Image 1: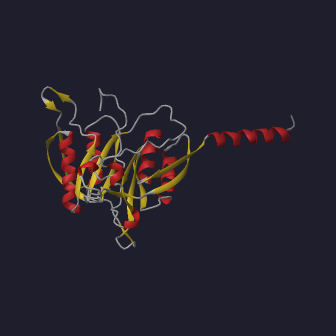
Image 2: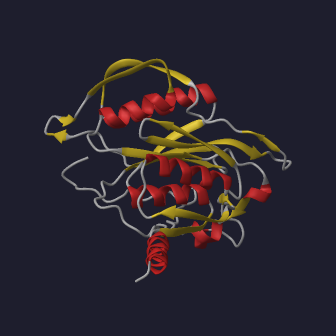
Length: 282
């Protein structure tokens, strides 16, 4: 084989390697950015958090009453309480089959630039990434600032609490500052249980950023890495905090597949299913 032929063969091998390791993630969902985040977490094992903007524009919303309500037979036609959810749309990302921290940052920046509704930014705290809202259309369809509800300082009296009590205390503290109700959904656990009841943790916060408090709470109450999705319920005008476990994946899988949407009747479309975990651990 001549040098020229050898060089061409090497080039073809490199190109083939690049093609094999190039994957595409396509999402079509009411919350496409959130669904993409959930998929990246489940497929790559990195902690990525997500927060909805506070949707208000009719053009960004859809009526999903007939899709999610299971009690329509109890109401006259068209009289059941409506369930309003984000309209969302489609997005496609080019992602590597395996990712380091720098790759995650690059993919997430590509993700927020592809958002069909709502504007977001990416910030990093250690090995945890946050996708947080920056702008959303107001009722008139004009772009308006939309800050994160976790970008506020909160204080919580230090005392012994169960895990669920800690989460409730954080949500109540945030609610009192942003003047919007924040509830906890998803995993509701009270620590390692014994005959004496749930494990209690000494926990408090003194004028600390809510995002840092929530991260510390998750680290305090479990040895497993966890993350969250925060959805805004337009109909009930409240936020829902969903906590779920980040899987430990060795080796990393190669093809990201979006998890299926889960219908619900809470008015918050696409609440995430907790990722499978060993029932003997948290």
